[in-house]
Image (cartoon, rainbow, N blue to C red; front, side):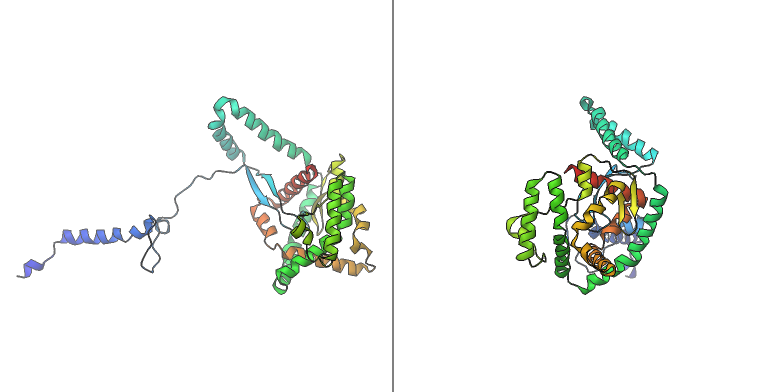
Length: 322
């Protein structure tokens, strides 16, 4: 009588294995909803991620932050990664072995790619690399230890609409710089648009706090400066130069700051300490609008100094071409 209820050990083991396997069914996905509240176990959590062969990238798109040490407007810039020789050779072999071999396309494509990057390399002159690296380290410390904590506090204190309006006001004050340089670059339409923007935003926009010129009439700003003007006239960039507090620049853009000084209304503030205070507040306010920009660029850089240098020079060259 008792033997009728004795379970065969083989059947017991079979049932245990079946229950164990079915417990993984919800983790397979297939678009189904897991009904139980416990998070399903993932295979990667048990076995670890599957090994993958990293494939180095030749280029990456970088979003520029709205800070003073880089151009204020956000643009997408093409940056070449400095690859180690084995990885670079692997990529070249991979490209040449695929679709580019058809109809002789490989040679043309690789020739255009190499010529583009060679042209960018020739632009950057860097005889002051030792000093520039040292100053980049100092600026990095200043940004992370002083500027960004202060800007973060202002970000917490002032709502974003207030900070954005203040940014517009300071940008509106630099109308003389933009107007003169649009004329020097033979862009009369841009000069007229800048004038219309200044008049409308200074009156209806309450001293530039608002931008009805763009909102109502679609008038965009033309951020032209003397560095771009000299570049358009054929003046070379010269050696790359990192300025204290301001960041990446070059010899041409540094000297271009001199004729811009009398066109900046803030320079007519009598007290030097008051001028410094106004400019510092402008920089802190502008930085507060993009607190993650510099950090994201730094995280993408294997070597911060050449990364910032190439980013700056390529962006300036693009602005001159525009």
